[in-house]
Image (cartoon, rainbow, N blue to C red):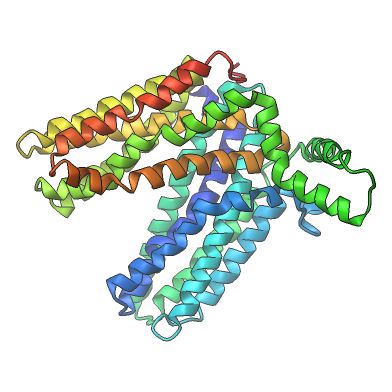
Length: 447
């Protein structure tokens, strides 16, 4: 069964995932520690984290990435790889600039450079997801499921590898006696960026001509609405094709009612998981677990569990099909949320804590793989970047907007965590009802 992961395309997808995950280390833990160790307050470090908000809005410029070609790079290495390399160059130059700055003297500039990295990284993510999907044929549903698993594992690998390298490098340089140890660490991390770009050259890119031809066909449909063709109508056609083309394509492919059903499902599927995730650490602390307990069970064990069961989840999607896997993942998420109710109504138990956390991570791993495979199979190859970014962002919007009321819900329940977790388990039901209604009408290839 594991032979599906030995397809050489999976190694390329693993690399793409690592390229996507690595920048999160730069603007997350590395920037936070750098600011903290330079004497800045916790609140300042916290506010600096607002640059992550960029990732929630990258769908706004995704249509441009599907259409605009990068001068020289597109012709030399391809449309997708050209965009990724351009963003990697921006990240590399940003790291070089960070190596020259002192946060205590140039805080605004340091955070601004961090924002540039976040914009480049989120833009890169759009292209990475598109290139990952395009590694697999439209009729290779099983390979798409395996690719989804490898992408998730790759992201975690890039994130963890970057974190380990940055922490070890900073620690060693500090112990040697360098006062600017973080600045030197960023130069070392820049070497990793260069190595990833070298690896990227081994990732194949195809389908550029077909994509451009399909986009031109859609542009012709729009331009046919104008009586005369001139520079102004050409501009309107290009803008309309770039912005509305992916949306029109999505509704035309699926039909209006099914397209709305897909959007509703994507928005609602992981809401219960998000409610639990937003409040979990507060819950752990309130029932008496220390930061060390949380680190061991929720973080260390969680990472091992996530990687292992992400790969197993990919195999499960292949064996059962993505729709059955989505139903199974939904039931799993609800069931594991109920384990937290048991934990809330029991005396403090490290065993129950470990069981709840591990099974929650297993459910999250299965759900993530199934979800990524599901939306990857839905996108039109003419607008891969835009449609995937839009569907992913709708899922993110559901989790972030609705889950923001999670604390208020706990307060309304007068701190009854058991009831809270039961409600989070029930939250998956509306999305599964939507999926059940439209399951026979979805256009998915699961061969």
